[in-house]
Image (cartoon, rainbow, N blue to C red; front, side, top):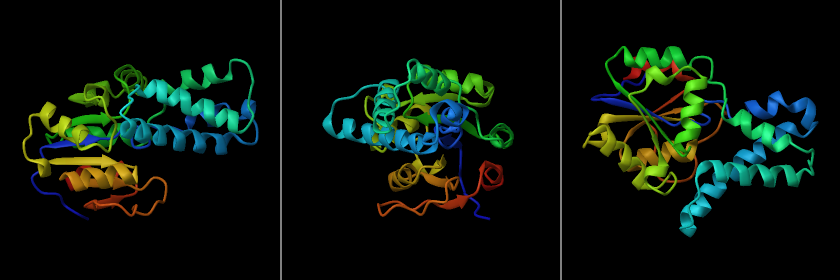
Length: 225
């Protein structure tokens, strides 16, 4: 097992790392029909693409807006037009379930006297809803949103924001944890010690940055920090 040295804070991505973003479509699959899984994957793909495109264009909108636009695209692509369905799906996005091991893993990290934080593309209201719904609000020292910066990950400004808020001036003192390859690698390239959670069986992307470790789920994390 990889042992990370000098860690003072553990900072987590939220969506796909702590929270299951495909839960809403699974819950509504009987209403959505045979393409529910494909719609969910396309929704997530477009959600991320729109954050990157808006960042490059310099036309920021918060993550709720981006998530709504991406869902519109995915539903239209599969010709799903049922009245009220989109609103129902979006409401479920505020009540995402945490992955089964998350609460115990966070408690174990806190038990090692590490600061804990979320650093997410999510808007503050979205993150507050998700964290409270999952019962995780007592397990984080802070929940940080890109809305304070006005640009999405993987901008270096976002990772720098975490350092400033945590009052940690040495990037390797932060362990960053993400299940998103691009996020994990960008954070590693920035200078964090990164642990990537391999929830989806993905290979590293062909971009700069190499995570320090790869784990199957968060239950392995506390022993590393």
